[in-house]
Structure formats: structure tokens, C-alpha cells
Image (cartoon, rainbow, N blue to C red; front, side):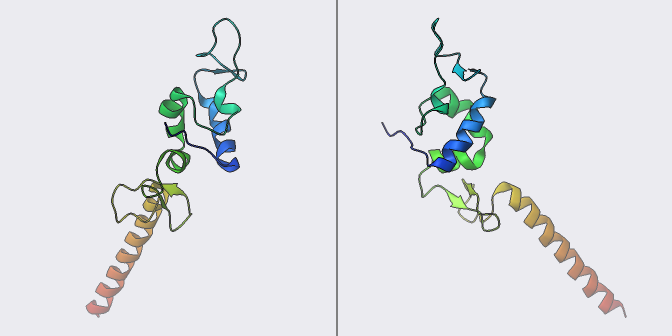
Length: 123
């Protein structure tokens, strides 16, 4: 079984995400609690060990999820912001956030050019 290892930056992001987990309570994991308090595994480990964390909490941060759980071939870097993302096609260049911004900018430029072209022809 291949357990993903995180670097320090990824670990810090994952540790911040543990507070979003519904099983996290005062640094302890309610799922592992069998009468005796048990520390949340994700808050002390550089490995992804908790199935619940992987399935329910990690997808909240798409970039971190892509970096940790996908292989290098499946992950791309956004050309605008450099964030890791899992592309939906082989032509994808931008993460979903930047894709919307770039699309709006290009559409505005296209409309601007169209307007300028039509006003020059009208003279």
C-alpha cells in the first residue's frame, strides 16, 4: 500500500484543514475515541493515514488534494498562479479559478476588438 508523504508546506495546509473535519474535537479524533482520547492522526503525521480525512476533508482544498493524492502525470501547474490542479482535458493550462478570470479577460478583449473593427468600417 502506497501511503502519500507530504512536505512541510503540504503538512501545514493539511493540519489547518483538520479543523474542518467533523470528527475533530479539541485536537482529538472522535472516530478513534474508544473511551480514551486519541490525538488526530492528521495533525501529527506527514502521511495521509485517515480515510475520512482523505474522502471528506481533503477535497475542500483542491490544490492540496491534487498535489498529495495524484501522480505527477495527472497533476498540472497553472500558468498564471502556479497552483497544482487536476486537468479535465489534456489542453488545460489554468486552474479553475484562473480559467474563469482568463476567459473573462479574453472575451472582453475580443469584444473590444470587434467593436473597434465595426466602428472603423462604419466611417
